[in-house]
Length: 182
Image 1: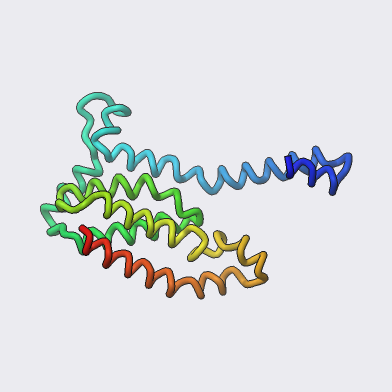
Image 2: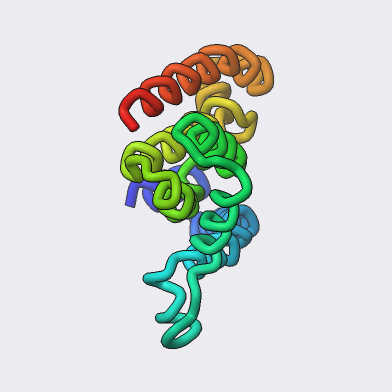
């Protein structure tokens, strides 16, 4: 309602046209940015042995879990390498700029890697999700800090450069704490 009232106050009789143009552009932008997340999340959902049979039919394997088990036979999975893998995947997932698109993927991956390693899956998932949110949710990606940069008058790239060391230090501290808790 506030948006409609502001549009009417600014554009008077042309408010409906301007409002529809702005809404259409916003929806197009949102679809363009978040559309790739849907198939990626679907692949990670199919990796879970609980979800895979619902989509592919009874007896369907959990491919991501099979990958985790195969990886555990090649590389000895313990808390340290698994935590590092989860943090790196979380950071990469957070680079979309929202920080929240990787949450489902990280949870499934934490279960897939944490089960064969015998470590606390909840702590591992929380670590990966924190890495995703901290890296992408308005800290390390210039387009996710645009609103803050615009209000404060700071260059977005400069702001993300300044955020880099504190965020990395926080992720290192969180990773160490998670390894201790696992």
